[in-house]
Amino acid sequence: MEALARRLHELCDAQPFTTSWYVRDLATGAVADRAGGVETPSASTRKTSIMMAAFKAVHEGRLDLDEPVRIEAEYQEGVASGTFQHLTPGVVIPLRDAIVHMIITSDNVSTRIVVDRIDLDELNAYCRAIGLAGTVHRFKIPPLGLPWDHPVDAVTTTTPADQGRLLEMILAGAADEQAAAHLGSTSQWCRYALDILSWQVHRSMIPALLPFGGRICNKTGRGVRGRSDAGLVYRGAQPLYVLTAFVDHIPEELPDGMPGWSGAVGLVARLSRACWDGIG
Image (cartoon, rainbow, N blue to C red; front, side, top):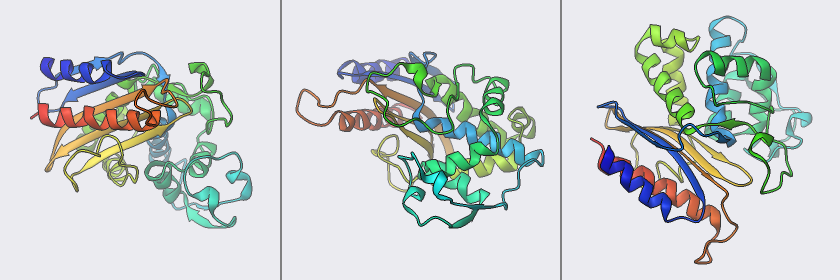
């Protein structure tokens, strides 16, 4: 892990933006991080905790995944992520599908629908209860029109370590009911959560340089000033590593003239490949 951490730091040090990350070797338990406990804009990586809070409510009988949900025009206003914003109002889907689309297409119409049924106070209390001390949900969906240099507390925040540990807790809960109970859930819902994460459509970061078709459970994020990804990577059927990476303060243009966002997603892909080559 020491050699891997040095390599990850070298990759980040060469970039004209700020990068923080957390990695765990799931075979040995070894951990390394770069500013892993420092709060940073979460972007849509926060949606994994929303999903797990929703499954807690399902487990407690307070939510029904078969509840029909109508995509009204009011849900589509002020949305800049996902596909449902472009659909004709009036489409009806089950709540289950809203949760799925919140994760796999990062759909913010779906996010608004799900958070309406939990509310922010419950969501933040849930994060504190399971140990995500650096994660604070401030809005149902992020506000539009924020400047590039907005303060970190103008948006939902998290830490690389929080997102890494959340994935580790879900993985543990998938195999152990006591671990699942810590999340207010059951092993069934933890396994379903991993399945949903494995259906992720956005594959330009953690999965991008890995062998095609492998199981990767990840949730990406895109904000005004950053890109992020939090993922659990398997080798065959065996969980190999957890990596969470948050790139912040991305310039509009890199020194070589390429767009800043392209350098950010490329860096996260290279961090993941270094973990793939250096672990196991």
